[in-house]
Length: 415
Image (cartoon, rainbow, N blue to C red; front, side):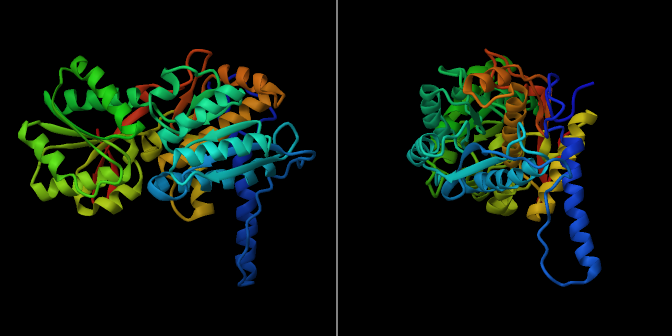
């Protein structure tokens, strides 16, 4: 039986036995809120996150986080920030880490890699963080990776680009999303076996995430009996993709794979509809958020994409993973009034895996945290069971992913 919310080498005191301690903290908050409503006080009540256990004391353990809360990647980074703000309270309400309070300092890189570099240096030099959670975008994450490698600071990444963990140095960085190669494998399997097509077109962003996805598709397409008959790219701030799509259409593909996050991917869906292109649109896990649906509007109808199981919680059959996921969704909705998207899940997994590692290490020394992260086994998160080692800092496999279709503005599991 896998251990809920912690590794199989987990620590009994770790708050991240999520199904138990996290739910106790949530229950206490709900009791306060309900009591206030019953009393009819009519005043806004702030829920407590106290779990009823011993309260942390001493100097805080400082963890830095860099997210894109504004500009191009805001649809991803906003919920990541929400999770990290929420989790500080719940972690401390459940006793903190190593008996000490946790302080999470969050910086907005404004979707700019240079801003991410500035933030990373400040967090390390001035705030003396013991680890970083960074970042929302692949370009920012790559930029910060060079710093954490040089300074030997553990970094939890929330991005999918293969280069994060495929290209050295990787000793100080671990990821929570499924990497592009894993997502591409699941997507290409669907295109080949379920759609039964052989000729595909590919449209991708020229940024780190999109270019990395294109490389993965190119390297694996033939393994699935697929021929790339056309490939086009675009820039993040492009406002029209009809030229690229017209070129792709002329090659007569049977399906189109689009590799980007919300903005460009939504524009592609709109332009495809305007051009009357009725071939299947297959998207990356970068569009697994409601912002894509809002931007694409009715053009999103019928789009299929690859995603982690948080998008379709009913697809989770393992009871340990289901308990962690249900608790996370329930708590996020309670705190923020909306369901979490997969990027919120990546942030949740990043902070809980990191906290678990610090607890098991019994120390905040970088080398001790590094060793504990590399020893993580069967850690249950919304996206799957994480297994890291000295040579594998990805944690997840293709079987952890599902195919999702947009129907009537909602997500539905593709059987």
